[in-house]
Length: 555
Image 1 (spheres, rainbow, N blue to C red):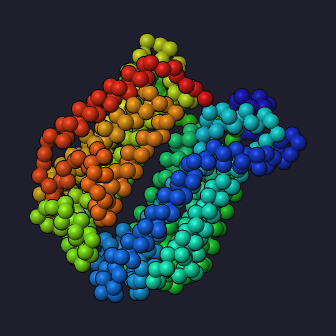
Image 2: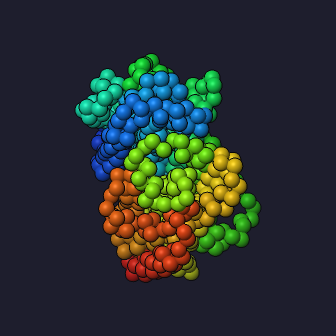
Image 3: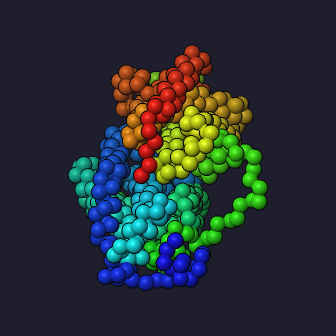
C-alpha cells in the first residue's frame, strides 16, 4: 500500500507530488538506461525486421513491376474499392512508380507493426512494472511519479526515430527508380510519427486499467480501429473517414508522389496530446490501480473457475476474442478481392510461377492457398502467446500458490496448452468463414465457403506442433521460451516469401506448415496431417515431462 493510500484512505487517488531529492521526473535518465538494457535484444530485432522487410519489399516491387506496362496493369487492378481498402488512397495511382507503389501498398501495413512495437514498449515499462510491484519498489527511492512513463515514452520515441532514420538511409541507398532521398526521408518520418501516436495512445490506456494485458488490448483495439477507418475511407469516394485515422494521415503525405510533410504535424500534435493526457491521468490514480474501477466479481464464482481449464479459459478469453475478430476481418478482406485475383496477378511473372507451383484449376484457388499461409501464421502468433502464458504466470508468482494445492503441474500447464490448441483451431475456423463468405460474394460461388473453411482448418495440426515446440521450451529451457517465436516467423518467410523468391524445397520441409496440403488448390492428403498431430502430441508430452522435473522460477 502506498503512502498516498495510507494518508487518504484505501482506493483514494494519490496526490501529485515530487520525489525526495528531485521533481516528478527524477530518475528518468536511469530508468531509460535500465529499459534500454532490458530491451537490448527485443528492440533491435523489431527494428531490423521492419527495416529488412521494407527493403526486400522495395526490391521486389522494382523487379516485379520493372516496366511502365507492368505498373499500368497494377494500377488497373489496384484501383477497385477492395484493392484500395487493402492498400491506400487512389492518388498514388496517378504516378505509380516503384516508390509510389511502396507508399501505397506498404506504408499502411508497416504502420500497424510500428504501432504494435510502440504499444508493447510502453505497456512493458509502465503498467507491467506496476502489476509486478517493481514500480512501487522503485518509487520508494528517489524516483518521481512521472519517471516511469517519461522513460517509457523516451525509449519508444528513440526506437521510432532510429527506425525512421534507418528506413530513410536504407531506401535512399537502394538506387531504385522513383525512390529518391527526399521521399525516403519522408517515408521514414511517417513511420516514426505513427509510432509516436500509438506510443501516446498506450500511455493513456496504461492509466485506465490495472492490468498490462488490458492496457495492451485496448491500445491494439485503437490500432485496429485506425486501420479499419483508413481502409473504409480509401475505398470510398470522399475518403473522409481516412482523415480520422493517424495511419490515414501518414498515407496522405503521398510519399514519393507529392511528398507532403504537413499531415505529419497532425500525428505529432495527437502524440503530444495523448502523452500529456497520460501524464495527467497518472496523477488521478494510485500506483498499481487504474482510472477505471474494477468491476466487483459475482457473489458466487462459476463452477468452471474451480477447474484448471476453466481458469485458463478465463485468462485467455480476451486475447482469443481479439485474434478471432481480427482473423475474421483479415479473411474477409482477402476474400473480397478473390474474384479479381486473376486480373490482378495475370501479368506478374514471378507470382504466376509461384501460383503454378502450388497448382489448382485456376489462379483464384492458388491465390487462396497462398493467402492461407498468411492466415495460419497469424493464428500461430496467437498460439505462441497463449502457450507462453503459463511461463508468464510462473515468473509473476501466480502459479506457485496454485501448485501448492492438489493441482498437478501437468494439469495446470496442460490447461494453458489445451486452450492454445483449441483457441488456435477456433481462430482458423473464423478466418476460413470470413474468407469463404467474402470470397463467395466476390466470385458468386457459394461452394467456396466450406472449401475455404476446410483449407484453413487443415493448418490446425501445424498450429498444434507450434504449441508443442513452445511446451518443450517452457518445460526444459524456460529462459529460452521466447525462441518459440521462431516457428511462425520462419513459417512466414519460407511459406509465403519463399514461394515468390523460390527458396530451396528443403527449407520449406523444415517448417511444420510446409507439410500441410495447400488446399483448396491441392488435394487433401490425411497422412501428413496425422503425422503432424502425432508429433504435436509427443512434443506436448515431452514439454510436460520437463516441467515436472525442474524447479519453478519467479522473478
